[in-house]
Image (cartoon, rainbow, N blue to C red; front, side, top):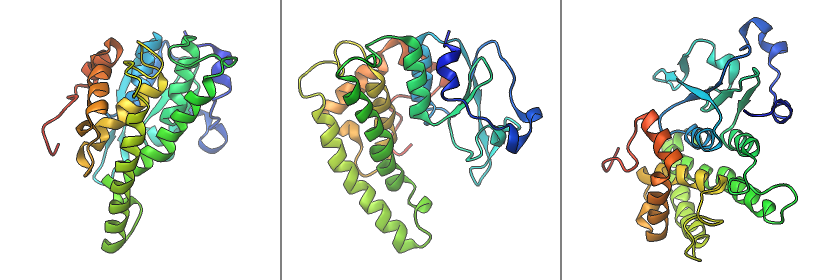
Length: 246
């Protein structure tokens, strides 16, 4: 089970703004609030991979993408975004990459993330931040330009820039696997492989689907064949490669 010392460093104190009666208490397992294949998928895989007991709570949104179920979700995550996790000690944590890091540290396996004393840890962290801060933003610009601009011309410009960025970033990420190893650090996926695997699927509705790249397509298939990934996908009930346009 994940250590309380590790979670204290990531604790979100909402008591002052929301009141103690709105906050979760201690639970027997971690609770991951999710949507199928969304930003919660990489954290879900990491929970499976780390062997952390958890349950899934699906979020329901209205037509404006505002969460309406479960009741009180906005008290946990005022931005209304996915994911949010409530760890078994009642700690609330948001942000996909942060949840992945917490789970990886709890697993205490170098294959997921190198220990602090190891030289390659810095490179792994840099890749993870690059994926969440640069690649993910490019995907969002290409697919959801209305989040970045109010007028039609602005949205078209944002989408065009996002697709151009995705083309360059695709080639850069594919280069990480040029040595032919199944995953970035060997035979098992690490936290950076997992996050990239989640993002590859997101690009399918852009003008630059990353699985059109042979290297990333092969990586994506290896990723979804991995047992923890297959379990998470089955639980969320979505297709690894859905029909075109979906």
